[in-house]
Structure formats: C-alpha cells, structure tokens
Length: 406
Image (cartoon, rainbow, N blue to C red; front, top):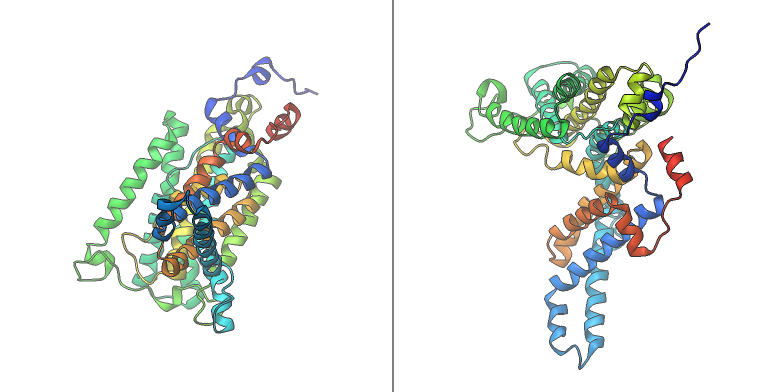
C-alpha cells in the first residue's frame, strides 16, 4: 500500500505575492476592525465639523471663547450622527410605530444586494483571487432577470424562480470568462474583470435602446416594468419595502459557509488560496478550482442583480447596479471574507446608506461624508498595521499568524 510522502516541492513552494497580500488583509483581529470603524467615524466627525458654517464661524474668535467652538462642534456632530442612527435603525422621534421601525427595514433592504455581492467577492478572496468585476456581473444578472420578468408570462412562483436562476446563470457565465482566461492563459483577473465591467455597462446601454429588448418605443434607456408575478413577496405590509430577497441572501450566506467550511470543494478552494503550487502538488486541480471559484462568485453577483429587479426596482435602467459591485469589495474586506462577517458588514453598510439620506435631509450636510466614512473604513481594513499604530495595538504573534494560515 502506497503512502503519501510530502515532496520538497510541496513543502518549499513559495507563497504567491497576491495570495500573501489577501491573507494579510483578512488576518487582522476583530479589535482592528472595530477600531477601523471607530477611526472612520472620527474622520467623518471632523468633516462634519468643518462642513458646518455655524462651527466654522466660531473659529474667528476661538482664542477669546473656545467653549463656543467645542459646543457648536459637539452639537453638529451629535445631531448628524443622531440623524444617521434615526434614519438607519430606530426613529424615536417619529409619530407612529410604523415610522419608528421603518428605518431598520430600509437598512435590510439596502443590505440585501450588498450581502449577495459581498459573498461574490469573499469566495475569490478565500481562493487567493480578486473579483473586481462584481458590478458587471450584477448588471448582466439584472439584465437577464429583468428581461425574463417583463418579456415572458409564467405562473407566479415559477416566474420568480426562472428569473432568479436566469440572473444567476448570466452572472456565472460573465465571471466564468475571467476565471477561464486566468486558468488557461494566466491572465490577471483584476484587469479582465474590470474590462468586463465596462463591457457590461455599454451592453446594457445598447440593449435598452433596442425595442425588441426593452419592449419600449421611448428613446430613454429604460425597459418596461416587470410583471407582478416575478417580484419577491414582501415580508411586511406597506409602506415597508423589506422583501423575500433578504431571506435569500441569508440562505446564500449559509450555503457559502457550508461550501467553504464543510465541503471538499471548499477545502480545495482554500488550499489553492493558500498556495496554488502546493495544492497542485497535492493533486488538486488548480485549473478547475480557479474556474469554479469565479463561476460561483458570478452566480452570487448575478443573484444580487436579479434582486434589484425582483425586489425593489420596477424596470431596467442603466444605473440598476449602482455601486453595489464596488461596495461589495468593502463588505467582503470588512467581513474578513467569512459569510457571517459579510452579513454583518452588509448590514452596516446598508445602515450607512439608509441613514445618509436622513442625515442629509435633517442636517443639510452632504451625503458624501458617509461615502468618505466608507472609504476610510476600506483604507484602514486593508492596512491593519496603520490601525494598530494609531491605537497602539499589539502585533499578531507568530503563533497566531500560523493559525490563520492553517
């Protein structure tokens, strides 16, 4: 009976730079993540202070009465973040119970596609790859699901399932192109997926101008409304918008957890992400894993695109994807590419998006401040040493790094 013997090539194979970079970004502790969010909120607070004319006016006589500046600054920051919380979680000043709890449901509505697309970035991260093409995959998923939604007549449940699966298949095919090119030719998936984003953006612009596709004679790039039979059922009555897509997102997160942590295929993905040369020596097909990782990721991003049509949008437009695909990179980084972390990160960014509208309307501050907060979170999460330096946090020990690599 033959026994497996570890070869020198397997044990000494160098870890690729890209895999090591991803591992470093995903290996920081929970404390570093929390401190990154806190630091981002502090930066946002400074922007709020210097964006408020009432605060900047007190700077002209700061040395005469410094208390006025600090009082105005506190009032500005507390009012802004209070409005952010009331617009995202719970509005205790609302006149009815419905209006009080509606903010948290809006947060979950915004979080739903972010969770789906975040999972589409998380799986390639765990396999040592960058999926920067989420936006293109969301677009083609939305195009396919939308076309099925308004161009065909089907029974209510069947119509929804066919549209959802069609969107997932389109996203899988779109991302599969990048996966196959990387596996077959060694093409950099970052460049390929970015180019596919541009192709998808121009493709939807072209198709929406074709009457056979949009079923509209209007020159405006917009499709007909999808049929009511294709829409996700609402989880709560009007005026709430929370729909069954949120349940689908949670089921997708559970499925990704099982895939990565409990299945043989997921083990192969993680092995390729740790060291593709060693994985190949151990008998794992790196070609197959590379293609499958991108196909599964594309299906999840296509699901996010289908969610837009089946859940909240009535028709296809050129802006149907928004910035979901790019925000998903932030969500995956913040969630450490773990399904549960992605769910919480998606909810956090959904809350920032829902609360930003309330903050802008109540305090007249620019919504861009929230975008800056999100961007700072990305910067700090991607650079754990910077956060540890700011807050004087200890460096990870050699033992902890080995445990993370294992």
